[in-house]
Length: 355
Ligand code: PHE
Image (cartoon, rainbow, N blue to C red; front, top):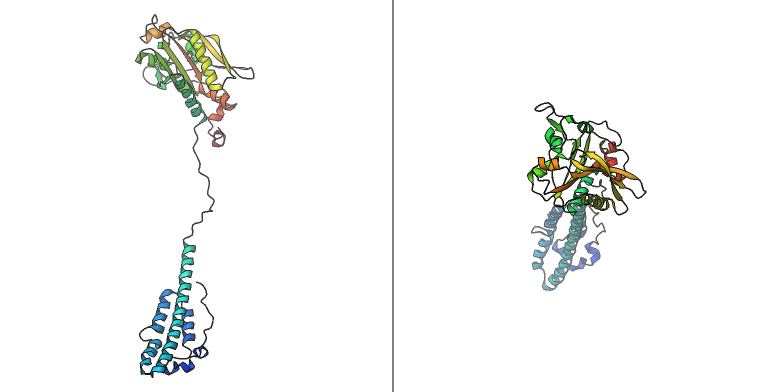
C-alpha cells in the first residue's frame, strides 16, 4: 500500500469562506481536515466507500448544508451555494485521489504476486542418443539401400541346419570348429544354437525369394569368445547376398570397392585375399586400406557355392551369386577412432554420448 497523501488541507477559514455563510449552514470549520484524516486512515476501497457515504451521502453534513440553503436570502444563498460547491469539489477530489492511490497499490500488489520469473535457470533438456553400433548399423543399411539392396532379417536363435548344414558344412567337418558355437538347450542335442554369423539369412532369403536377389542382412551374432579389445561373445555382422545372371568375381570385387568408398570415402581402397569358407567358392577375405597405407581385415566373401544354391532350390546352371559378411562393431571402432571394443558395452553414457 502506498502512503496516503498527508498534505494538510487548508481549513475552510483560510479559503475565505468564513463570510460566505457556510458556517451559518452548520458546516464545521474543520470539515476538510476531518475528511482528509478519515480518507488517509482507510486501507481499502471498501473502507474508502464507507467514508464517502459518511461525508457526501444522504445523512452527511454537506447534504444537510445544501438543504439549509433554501432558508437563506437570495443573495446570501447564491454566495453560500457557490462556496458549498467548492467544498464539495474539494471533498470529491480527496476521495478520488485516495481511490486512485488504493487502486494503484492493489495493482502493484497483484503484479508482485503474479510475477513469473522468466530468468530462472533450469537444467538443459537431455536428448537421447543412438548407440554407436546402432548408428553404424543404420548407416550401413543406408549405403547398401543406396546401391539398390533391400534389407532382410533372420532369427538370432537358429537351427544347426541354417547356421551350418544348408551352407555346405559337412557333419563333423572341422570348419564348424571355426565358429565356437553356443548351443541352446532345446530340441535334440546340438540342433539349436545362437547363430554364429548372419550367413543363415542368405539361405532363408534364397528359399523364399526368386532371383534376382540383392539383400543385406544386419544382425546380432554370438560366439564363445573371451572379451578382449577386438572380440566380444555378442557382436554384429552385416551379410550381403546377390543372386542374378552372369554374376562374376569381378562384380563382387567392384561391389566391395564401391562400398568401401561410399562408407569410408575416396581415400580408402579395398582388396580381396584368397581364403576358405564352405559356402563360397572361390572364397576371399576382404581388407580395406586406410589413407596411412595400413591394411585392415574387414570380413569374408566369395561366389555362392553351387551346393548352397541347389540346397535353397536355385538352379546353379542358371544363376550365379556372391556373398559377403563383415563385422559392424569393428567398423564402428574404425569410424569413430575407438580402440577397445569393450568400451561400447560398459554403457558409460559419458563415453557413449561423445559419438
Ligand atoms: N559368415 C562368414 C563369417 O562370419 C563371412 C562370410 C560371409 C564369408 C559371406 C563369405 C560369404 O566368417
